[in-house]
Image (tube, rainbow, N blue to C red):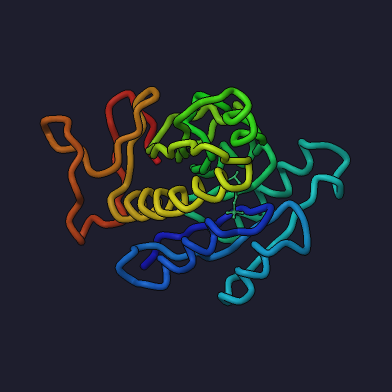
Amino acid sequence: MSFRLVVLVSGSGTNLQALLDATASAAFGARVVAVGADRHGIEGLARAERAGVQTFVEQVSDYANRDEWDAALAARIAEHRPDLVVSAGFMKILGPRVLAAFPVVNTHPALLPAFPGAHAVRDALAYGVRLTGCTVHLVDAGVDTGPVIAQEAVAVREGDDEQTLHERIKTVERGLLVEVVGRMAREGWAVTGRTVRIGRTDESGGAGRTGPEESFQQCQEPGGTTR
Ligand code: GRF
């Protein structure tokens, strides 16, 4: 099981926990090799420690500017040689050095491109939508603007407040994140424009599962980005 995940967290880390639980099975095809955070004392770091996973913290306030923080975070992540970085409730915008060095997926508690940013659930409720959900997407330089990999809808219920709705979204979000990360690890992925295709591309252009001998190969498409 050689596919290596570094997970970045800022808070309670329930998405991280879902990944830790899933990766306990070798069949998942990936393992969490380190957990990074932008702050100390959070439950996400405690979850990693309980699971025996290495942790690191890089705080923006410890650096003269964002650029230095970005370089330090990229270096810390690189120590763990990840195949994929997972931003799972990491409440900082990643900088160009991190994004140039590693593929990064993020999970977001809304159906992007609706309600990007740090208050997605609050914003969706304030808008009055009846349907919201979660999005797992590749991270680019924008705020929640990267290519969508997968989405799942969650209905807003009468009487929902930010907390009740967010908890229901998170239940769905954890399952979606685990499913997407597992498939990326086992099958590889290719990006063409804004389309992310998981699985080996066959001659007809469709995506298919790779055989076991190719489990950790990733895909390439003409004109696409290979990760
Ligand atoms: C998730 O809903 C994530 O999308 C958002 O913050 C929440 C993190 O939850 N950015 P947890 O820390 O994984 O419990």
